[in-house]
Length: 246
Image (cartoon, rainbow, N blue to C red; front, side, top):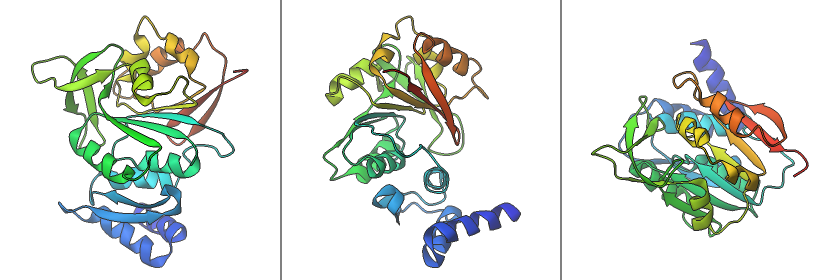
Protein backbone atom coordinates (compact mmCIF):
# COMPACT_ATOMS: atom_id res chain seq x y z
CA UNK A 1 0.00 0.00 0.00
CA UNK A 2 2.79 2.43 0.89
CA UNK A 3 4.56 1.69 -2.39
CA UNK A 4 1.35 2.30 -4.33
CA UNK A 5 0.79 5.61 -2.53
CA UNK A 6 4.37 6.74 -3.20
CA UNK A 7 3.94 5.83 -6.84
CA UNK A 8 0.69 7.76 -7.06
CA UNK A 9 2.28 10.78 -5.43
CA UNK A 10 5.18 10.66 -7.90
CA UNK A 11 2.83 10.56 -10.88
CA UNK A 12 0.68 13.38 -9.51
CA UNK A 13 3.77 15.52 -8.98
CA UNK A 14 5.16 14.78 -12.44
CA UNK A 15 1.94 14.94 -14.45
CA UNK A 16 -0.73 16.72 -12.45
CA UNK A 17 -3.97 15.29 -11.07
CA UNK A 18 -5.77 14.13 -14.22
CA UNK A 19 -2.78 12.64 -16.05
CA UNK A 20 -1.32 11.17 -12.88
CA UNK A 21 -4.52 9.30 -12.05
CA UNK A 22 -4.83 8.07 -15.63
CA UNK A 23 -1.29 6.68 -15.58
CA UNK A 24 -1.91 4.73 -12.39
CA UNK A 25 -5.13 3.40 -13.92
CA UNK A 26 -3.33 2.33 -17.11
CA UNK A 27 -0.75 0.44 -15.05
CA UNK A 28 -3.45 -1.70 -13.45
CA UNK A 29 -5.59 -2.08 -16.57
CA UNK A 30 -5.36 -5.22 -18.69
CA UNK A 31 -6.38 -4.55 -22.27
CA UNK A 32 -5.55 -5.71 -25.78
CA UNK A 33 -5.88 -2.11 -26.96
CA UNK A 34 -2.98 0.29 -26.83
CA UNK A 35 -3.21 3.69 -25.13
CA UNK A 36 -1.32 6.94 -25.49
CA UNK A 37 0.46 9.04 -22.89
CA UNK A 38 1.81 12.53 -23.35
CA UNK A 39 4.90 13.81 -21.55
CA UNK A 40 7.48 16.54 -22.22
CA UNK A 41 10.16 14.01 -21.30
CA UNK A 42 9.25 11.92 -24.35
CA UNK A 43 8.61 14.92 -26.56
CA UNK A 44 4.84 14.45 -26.68
CA UNK A 45 2.55 11.48 -27.17
CA UNK A 46 3.81 7.88 -26.97
CA UNK A 47 1.91 4.61 -27.27
CA UNK A 48 1.93 1.89 -24.59
CA UNK A 49 0.23 -1.41 -23.85
CA UNK A 50 -1.71 -0.98 -20.57
CA UNK A 51 -1.04 -3.44 -17.79
CA UNK A 52 2.31 -4.57 -19.21
CA UNK A 53 5.96 -3.82 -18.50
CA UNK A 54 5.61 -0.86 -20.88
CA UNK A 55 4.32 1.11 -17.92
CA UNK A 56 7.29 0.22 -15.72
CA UNK A 57 9.67 1.34 -18.48
CA UNK A 58 7.74 4.60 -18.75
CA UNK A 59 8.16 5.12 -15.00
CA UNK A 60 11.88 4.39 -15.25
CA UNK A 61 12.36 7.02 -17.91
CA UNK A 62 10.00 9.74 -16.74
CA UNK A 63 10.16 9.53 -12.94
CA UNK A 64 13.84 8.71 -12.45
CA UNK A 65 17.01 10.22 -13.93
CA UNK A 66 18.14 8.18 -16.90
CA UNK A 67 21.11 10.15 -18.17
CA UNK A 68 22.85 13.27 -16.92
CA UNK A 69 22.13 16.56 -18.63
CA UNK A 70 24.70 18.73 -20.32
CA UNK A 71 25.95 16.16 -22.84
CA UNK A 72 26.21 16.66 -26.58
CA UNK A 73 25.44 13.26 -28.09
CA UNK A 74 25.15 13.49 -31.88
CA UNK A 75 24.93 9.82 -32.91
CA UNK A 76 23.08 7.34 -30.70
CA UNK A 77 22.65 3.57 -31.09
CA UNK A 78 19.99 2.04 -28.83
CA UNK A 79 20.41 -1.74 -28.54
CA UNK A 80 17.26 -3.27 -27.07
CA UNK A 81 14.89 -0.41 -27.86
CA UNK A 82 11.74 -2.28 -26.76
CA UNK A 83 8.77 -0.09 -27.77
CA UNK A 84 10.82 3.07 -28.22
CA UNK A 85 10.21 4.98 -24.99
CA UNK A 86 13.94 5.39 -24.38
CA UNK A 87 14.40 6.36 -28.03
CA UNK A 88 11.80 9.09 -27.65
CA UNK A 89 13.41 10.25 -24.39
CA UNK A 90 16.80 10.45 -26.09
CA UNK A 91 15.31 12.24 -29.09
CA UNK A 92 13.69 14.84 -26.83
CA UNK A 93 16.93 15.31 -24.88
CA UNK A 94 19.16 15.43 -27.97
CA UNK A 95 16.93 16.62 -30.85
CA UNK A 96 19.84 17.07 -33.25
CA UNK A 97 21.14 13.54 -32.80
CA UNK A 98 20.89 10.74 -35.34
CA UNK A 99 19.41 7.69 -33.60
CA UNK A 100 19.54 4.03 -34.65
CA UNK A 101 17.11 1.83 -32.69
CA UNK A 102 17.52 -1.97 -32.67
CA UNK A 103 14.85 -4.36 -31.35
CA UNK A 104 14.42 -8.12 -32.08
CA UNK A 105 10.87 -8.89 -30.87
CA UNK A 106 8.17 -8.40 -33.50
CA UNK A 107 5.48 -7.05 -31.16
CA UNK A 108 7.87 -4.60 -29.51
CA UNK A 109 9.28 -3.60 -32.90
CA UNK A 110 5.80 -2.75 -34.22
CA UNK A 111 5.29 -0.46 -31.22
CA UNK A 112 8.78 1.02 -31.73
CA UNK A 113 7.91 1.91 -35.32
CA UNK A 114 4.62 3.47 -34.18
CA UNK A 115 6.34 5.53 -31.49
CA UNK A 116 9.01 6.83 -33.85
CA UNK A 117 6.83 7.42 -36.91
CA UNK A 118 7.51 10.79 -38.51
CA UNK A 119 10.97 11.27 -36.99
CA UNK A 120 13.38 11.45 -39.92
CA UNK A 121 16.42 11.27 -37.62
CA UNK A 122 15.41 7.88 -36.16
CA UNK A 123 16.11 4.61 -38.00
CA UNK A 124 14.57 1.37 -36.69
CA UNK A 125 16.19 -2.01 -37.32
CA UNK A 126 14.49 -5.33 -36.48
CA UNK A 127 17.38 -7.50 -35.29
CA UNK A 128 19.20 -8.83 -32.26
CA UNK A 129 22.64 -7.63 -31.18
CA UNK A 130 25.27 -10.38 -31.22
CA UNK A 131 29.04 -10.79 -31.48
CA UNK A 132 28.79 -12.46 -34.91
CA UNK A 133 26.38 -12.19 -37.87
CA UNK A 134 23.76 -14.92 -38.26
CA UNK A 135 20.33 -15.78 -36.89
CA UNK A 136 19.04 -15.88 -33.33
CA UNK A 137 16.19 -17.39 -31.39
CA UNK A 138 14.09 -15.48 -28.89
CA UNK A 139 12.98 -16.71 -25.49
CA UNK A 140 11.09 -15.07 -22.67
CA UNK A 141 13.01 -14.51 -19.44
CA UNK A 142 10.18 -12.93 -17.45
CA UNK A 143 6.53 -12.00 -17.47
CA UNK A 144 6.50 -8.85 -19.54
CA UNK A 145 7.34 -7.92 -23.13
CA UNK A 146 10.55 -6.28 -21.90
CA UNK A 147 12.06 -9.64 -20.90
CA UNK A 148 12.97 -11.33 -24.17
CA UNK A 149 16.48 -12.74 -24.55
CA UNK A 150 18.21 -13.59 -27.81
CA UNK A 151 19.81 -17.03 -28.05
CA UNK A 152 22.24 -18.48 -30.55
CA UNK A 153 20.92 -20.69 -33.37
CA UNK A 154 18.37 -23.43 -32.83
CA UNK A 155 15.64 -24.78 -35.12
CA UNK A 156 13.30 -21.88 -34.33
CA UNK A 157 15.94 -19.22 -34.92
CA UNK A 158 14.55 -16.54 -37.22
CA UNK A 159 15.83 -13.22 -35.86
CA UNK A 160 18.63 -11.54 -37.78
CA UNK A 161 21.79 -11.16 -35.72
CA UNK A 162 23.84 -8.02 -36.23
CA UNK A 163 27.16 -6.92 -34.81
CA UNK A 164 27.71 -3.36 -33.64
CA UNK A 165 29.80 -2.51 -36.75
CA UNK A 166 26.96 -3.84 -38.94
CA UNK A 167 24.45 -1.65 -37.12
CA UNK A 168 26.71 1.35 -37.64
CA UNK A 169 26.96 0.56 -41.35
CA UNK A 170 23.20 0.23 -41.76
CA UNK A 171 22.65 3.39 -39.78
CA UNK A 172 25.16 5.29 -41.87
CA UNK A 173 27.35 6.37 -38.95
CA UNK A 174 31.12 6.09 -38.50
CA UNK A 175 31.27 6.89 -34.78
CA UNK A 176 28.82 6.44 -31.88
CA UNK A 177 28.48 9.28 -29.38
CA UNK A 178 26.29 7.15 -27.10
CA UNK A 179 25.78 3.39 -27.22
CA UNK A 180 22.86 2.33 -25.03
CA UNK A 181 22.75 -1.40 -24.29
CA UNK A 182 19.91 -3.26 -22.59
CA UNK A 183 19.87 -6.69 -24.22
CA UNK A 184 18.74 -8.92 -21.35
CA UNK A 185 22.01 -10.73 -20.64
CA UNK A 186 23.32 -11.06 -24.20
CA UNK A 187 25.97 -8.51 -23.25
CA UNK A 188 27.85 -11.57 -21.98
CA UNK A 189 28.35 -12.89 -25.51
CA UNK A 190 28.79 -9.42 -27.02
CA UNK A 191 31.70 -8.42 -24.78
CA UNK A 192 33.25 -11.90 -24.48
CA UNK A 193 34.05 -11.85 -28.21
CA UNK A 194 37.66 -12.03 -29.27
CA UNK A 195 37.31 -8.83 -31.30
CA UNK A 196 35.84 -5.79 -29.55
CA UNK A 197 37.91 -3.25 -31.44
CA UNK A 198 34.69 -1.44 -32.43
CA UNK A 199 34.70 0.10 -28.93
CA UNK A 200 37.39 2.43 -30.26
CA UNK A 201 34.62 4.16 -32.24
CA UNK A 202 32.31 4.61 -29.22
CA UNK A 203 32.54 7.68 -26.98
CA UNK A 204 30.07 6.68 -24.24
CA UNK A 205 28.23 3.50 -23.22
CA UNK A 206 25.10 3.29 -21.08
CA UNK A 207 24.56 -0.34 -20.13
CA UNK A 208 22.28 -2.41 -17.92
CA UNK A 209 24.12 -5.49 -16.69
CA UNK A 210 22.22 -8.68 -15.87
CA UNK A 211 24.58 -10.54 -13.55
CA UNK A 212 21.70 -11.34 -11.19
CA UNK A 213 20.68 -14.16 -13.51
CA UNK A 214 23.59 -14.33 -15.99
CA UNK A 215 26.77 -14.21 -13.89
CA UNK A 216 29.75 -12.90 -15.80
CA UNK A 217 28.03 -10.09 -17.72
CA UNK A 218 29.77 -7.35 -15.78
CA UNK A 219 33.09 -9.15 -15.80
CA UNK A 220 32.99 -9.54 -19.59
CA UNK A 221 31.96 -5.92 -20.11
CA UNK A 222 34.58 -4.29 -17.87
CA UNK A 223 37.37 -6.52 -19.22
CA UNK A 224 36.40 -5.61 -22.80
CA UNK A 225 36.51 -1.84 -22.20
CA UNK A 226 39.60 -1.92 -19.94
CA UNK A 227 42.06 -0.93 -22.68
CA UNK A 228 40.45 2.52 -22.79
CA UNK A 229 40.14 5.11 -20.00
CA UNK A 230 36.62 5.94 -18.75
CA UNK A 231 34.66 8.02 -16.25
CA UNK A 232 31.80 6.10 -14.59
CA UNK A 233 28.46 7.24 -13.17
CA UNK A 234 25.31 5.39 -12.16
CA UNK A 235 21.78 6.28 -13.24
CA UNK A 236 18.97 4.02 -12.09
CA UNK A 237 19.91 0.50 -13.18
CA UNK A 238 22.40 1.67 -15.81
CA UNK A 239 26.13 2.35 -15.72
CA UNK A 240 27.24 5.28 -17.87
CA UNK A 241 30.82 4.97 -19.10
CA UNK A 242 32.30 8.04 -20.82
CA UNK A 243 35.69 7.97 -22.49
CA UNK A 244 38.33 10.30 -21.13
CA UNK A 245 40.56 12.28 -23.52
CA UNK A 246 38.60 11.03 -26.52
